[in-house]
Image (cartoon, rainbow, N blue to C red; front, side, top):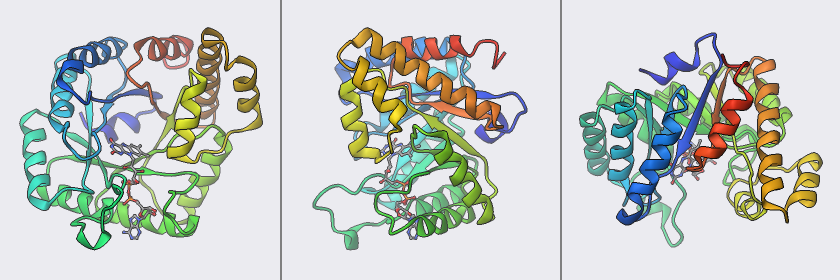
Amino acid sequence: MKITDIITQSKPSLSFEVFPPKTNDKFASVLSAATSIAELKPSYMSVTYGAGGGTSQYTADICTSLKALSVTPLAHLTCVSSTKEKIHSELTNLRSHGVENILALRGDIPSGFERSEMVYTHASELIAQIKSFGGFCIGGACYPEGHPESENSTSDIDALKIKAESGCEFLTTQMFFDNNILYNFLYRIMKADIKIPVVAGIMPVTNASQIKRLMSISQSALPQRFVRIVDRYGDNPAAMKQAGIAYATEQIIDLYANGINAVHVYSMNKPDVAAAIKSNLSEIIA
Ligand code: FAD
């Protein structure tokens, strides 16, 4: 099933994410986590793509397993260190695994990489190639607080417009912890006449050490309300987990209440976190 058909239904959607292992010895445990999350019957599941592409076969294999469990997979694919030929063979491989949906990303530019040597400089070029390959529903990433490389929010929205014109059919947001940031962003993209659906990405922060790492990659603003939770419960892992799940649940309920029907949870291979969120929303998404 196409992701666009799932996220545009009147019923709210709730999807989860898993990331593949870096090494083969961890594959069985990641697959087991993905299977447990799939048993929660999410609207779909995304499977990330390891930076550099060295683990792309794990992404494809996990997608196949999800399909066997009747969960629609969304395979991530990055292009920053790839070539047109390699991407062509990745697409052929994903098709042979029955994958219909791709989240097309540029990826982070590896340190020491010369932009002049890059075959792909932006995700829109990958999106155009996937579109001409044909047969995939294509998504892309967006950044309610701006992408770290962008000069300003206007240039970021201009880039999104190019993404949509290149064939991107839906967007998934970077994590955010203040829903007003998303609502402002949706208003700005509507004004730019970008009409493709947006899936809100929510990260349940379940331990204090996660936060520093997340902030360095996403530059998301932390509302005072959230900072106080971490200050109070950061040293108590069980309490921090409970509070983080509750905070994410509240964000999701507010999104649904404001008409944002598609929510994607960065569940980080944690079936217990995914299950707790699903259970907190049982009547809401019934
Ligand atoms: P782009 O859309 O190319 O944007 C990068 C920068 O270029 C932005 O500043 C943008 O404004 C600008 N830009 C874009 N297009 C143009 C244009 N045509 N002209 C001028 N400027 C332009 N990384 C992984 O390695 N694996 C993953 O699985 C993965 N999944 C992700 C999922 C989501 C939902 C998100 C939000 C991010 C994910 N990332 C992943 C991280 C992502 O690869 C990085 O954030 C990367 O730096 C940018 O990728 P992008 O596809 O957004 O790039």
